[in-house]
Length: 189
Image (cartoon, rainbow, N blue to C red; front, side):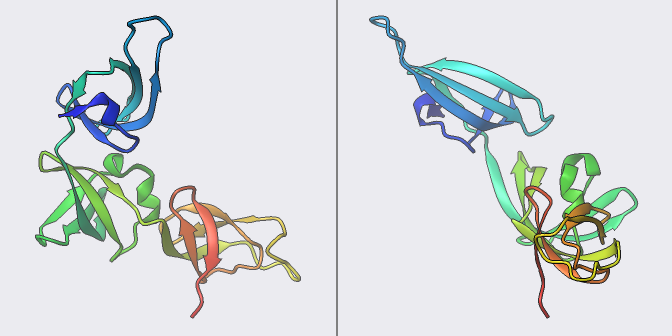
């Protein structure tokens, strides 16, 4: 239980028996005498992705969701399932592409990430900020190209297509920002 005035962005609340991530919090003090503080929150369902806006009075309490974060490792993809291992218990489990969403474009064998569990069930995975991936297909290098030149599309080993500088060639290892699918740098060595 937590008082609504203590809620902050990133908290996970239990609303109607389901986990919801707080995406925005704002408080408002009405100008009328005797009116109490209003706390407005926007939440996103971790189970369905649905968004919702709620308003509470200053003294209201809400339930925090009983969630746990655990380190996991991606092992391999088998048909449509993605196989992971819990790094604390060494138990293996599988997740469907629907649960992973855009994260599937960054999963390479051996990648360590974090899972969010609710009532013992994995709801979602949290990727590292950057991931190293190999460029498998891109247009040929443009002679005299610099980093400020126009970008070109490149297909990575996971099937993800991003924009890269024109000096990159197929077979090169690059760092990709998982938050916005942006090229960060060429990996040296």
